[in-house]
Image (tube, rainbow, N blue to C red; front, side, top):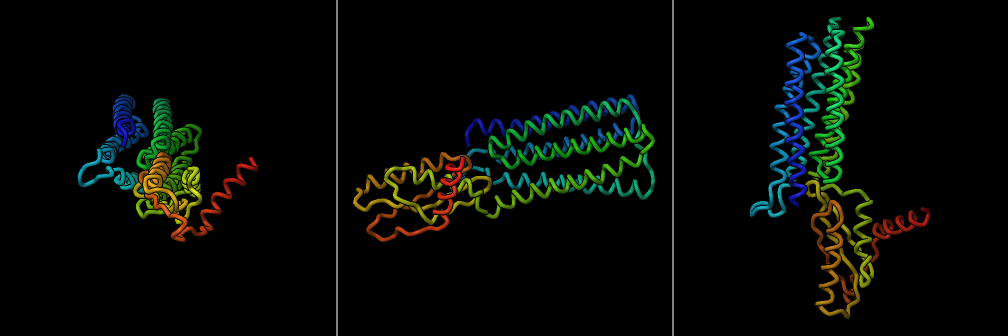
Length: 313
C-alpha cells in the first residue's frame, strides 16, 4: 500500500469522527436552548454516530497497516470486514427507523415540533452529511476502498433520516403530522437497500468472486500488447479482499532463449500489475513446441467484444 493511500484512507476515519462530534455538540447546544424534541433526537443520533465512527476509524487504521511477516501482502483484506460492520450498523439504523415509525402510526402519537431551530439544524445536518458523502465516495472510488465506499453510503443514509425528520417537522407546521412516520417508513426501505448493496459487494470480495469482465478484458489486452506474445489462455482473475489476483498463460515462440522468455514474462507481469485493482499477477510461459497453445473461447470473446466496441465507437 502506498503512503498516499494509507494517509487518505486514515484521514477519512478521522474526518468522519470529528464531523460527528461537532454535529453532536451543535445539536446538543441547540437542544438545551430550544428544548426541541426533534433536535434532541438528532443530538442522540449524532452521539451514536460518533461512537460508531470510532469503530470505523479503528477499522480503517487496521486495514492500512503496512505488510509484515504474518501479512506479507498487507492488511487490505480486513476492509471487507470493516464494510460489513458498517452494513450491520446500517441495518440496525433501518430497523430502528422502521420500528419507531410503526409504533408512532399505531399509537397515533405524532409529536414532531414545528420549530424553526429544528428546521435549521436538520437542513444543516443534511448539508454536512452530503459533503461527507461526496468526499467519501470520491476517495472510495479513487482508492478502490470498499470500506470508505461503505462509509459514504452510511452518510447518504444520514441525509435520508435528516430529511425524514424535516418532513415530520414541516408536516406539523401544515397540520399533517402523519407525514413524519410515513416518510420514515420510506426512508427505512432505502436504508435497508443500502445495507444490502454493501453486503452484496463485500461478500464478493470475501469469497473470491471474479471481477467485472471489463477488467478481465484489460488484463488480456495488456498481455497481448507485448509484441512477442502470440496468444493467451487460461486467464483467471479473482478477488482477494478488495484487490484482484491474476494468473494466465501466454504463448510465445519456442526458439527464444530462457533470458528472452523471462524478460517477456516480467514485462507482462509488470503491465498487468499496473492495472487498477490488480495486486499480483502470475504468468506461465507456453512455448509452441510443447503443444500447449490452445483455444480459449472466453478469452477470444472478450478481445473480440472490445474490438467490436472500438469499431462501433
